Image (tube, rainbow, N blue to C red; front, side, top):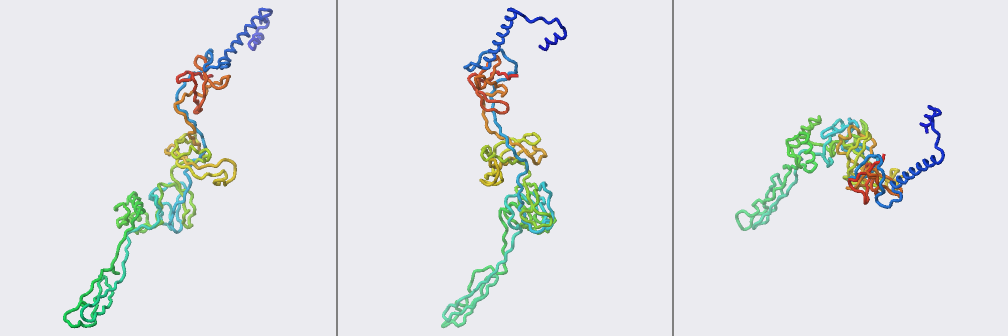
Length: 445
């Protein structure tokens, strides 16, 4: 009509008159019949009135054709998480005195590095699982002591001699007793003249040595050798050679070369640590909460719904979407056993609305993939459901059939019924008597 009006405005008087009489009525009826036939064709294409798997043919419409393919569909569920280094743990500092130096928060400390200084003496980090529970030093010297009482008895024909007791010497021999009477009726020496013998005891003048032994010695010697101080056998015995290596180590630290390691001189951890927030200030007394630490690997903590945490199994692979949009691979490392209520309590404690949660820790093996990012909110994607080797098409290929359900349009314009299954990654699982791999279906424009 717009074009007609335009033509009328540009060329007045040249427009033809509308048809009149029977001839015009016949033209109008013909146009109406064509419209009805076209509508019926469209209805048939949509499956109206069709009861079979395939609808009647119809002229093909425009749109791209894609094949039905077999694939594995994976449904992923997303939960919120927090990237960081994990919970800070107090270092087991056993040194006593005044804290005279502390490291910066966020700094990294390796084996042999100084964690802090107490009374201006370094407390050194070593690697191991056994805590320091005693001083380690060279072999101890123990002095023996004691006394023995020796005595003898006289035998023979005379009156028995009364033996006088003697104090044992270092050699452990007792002085013989002297007979008080004379032998009766005979000559010669009686048995009383024979010196008695006694076991040789350990006298006050002797010494005995014992070496410190144990798994803590093996752990310490392993660290000492790893730091380059050798010349001894790495075993469970702290020998004089070990003490010599300790003196060389102490010289490098600038402390007295005693050869003995005090209980507060070292702190053990499983590996390199990242310094957390200090629990004291300079000038305060050292204690158990003097310094905190975490591991150096970044990880993600997810507060997963306790009612829907079946996915959270140690070793489960997940994907972590970082704040900058990049995705890195992760793995469930641990799952908490105590549910936390929305208000922060456990069990039925706490207040607030919502479901209880379980803390789930996810590790990231490739730390370089995280870049320099040290913390922030992230999204963790895990597999909620998965189907393998099923027929799939793009979701956009589905069409709604008039009699209900879904269908697919074939290349020649026919419509076939299709049952839908899992939707994932922009595709959908389809099945049906007429649906087969390789079938070309249309994605309507």
